[in-house]
Image (tube, rainbow over all chains, first blue to last red; front, side, top):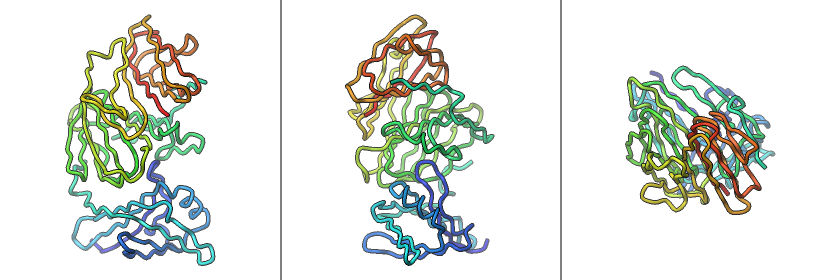
Length: 112
Length: 233
């Protein structure tokens, strides 16, 4: 299986998908450790998507999925600080700060 | 003020492995005017076919109470908990700062039906936790049995919100009065049977009443009924 990584933002309550770098060719993201937490810097989002993410910033589920060659899919979920989800309209850049991360392998859990 | 929501007004779906009804915006059902009732955000009435379930997924800052109505539900989470619950048992998961979990039908022969209820906690960033409790199913007749509340108890799950979930049964013709403090809300759901409210309304199976600005409620069994009442801020 090929190696790949992608980034996803969903609404934590309804499960509604808000952003997905796998399906949105224009979406770019940078992930880095920032103090005790993690910072995502995202570009290429349309204004409607940004507005929805900002509206739902207190209830976001943010993921980084990592598929390594011949390894099970690893999911990294981030506990977002809604007060540190910001959009710089001049730079067209969304930043999302997460306080913590949980890494999990779905195959390790009970499955259908 | 009593707002009746008929069973058929819920968003019903059938995905083969999972069928049910959503009372609030959830999944593909999105209604900006129906996202919450006080701190209550989700009320899903789910049936999962044998051997299937929800794969590993995260939650945060949500009190999640699962009430199994029949069948067996298997829970597993990143805190190390594994539990199988059936009728008479309650699962409470406080997602807090984050937890990964799965929910599956534990049986390979029987469907499981559960009420999945989500509430916003009084405080964000809580330490994630999970518990199961069991209530006395023989005590339901003519009573409102607390199964989850902010105070908790030996047979009452502890939720991090100023609220109480009650279950009760009323035989046909029997009545019960419920009182709550001014300014609070009631969420009443008929699990099975016809339940009268204030001699004015009748909830059929699957119907809901969202009640505000009414601190006393007269409940009446129009037929043998099994119902849930939630006292909310």
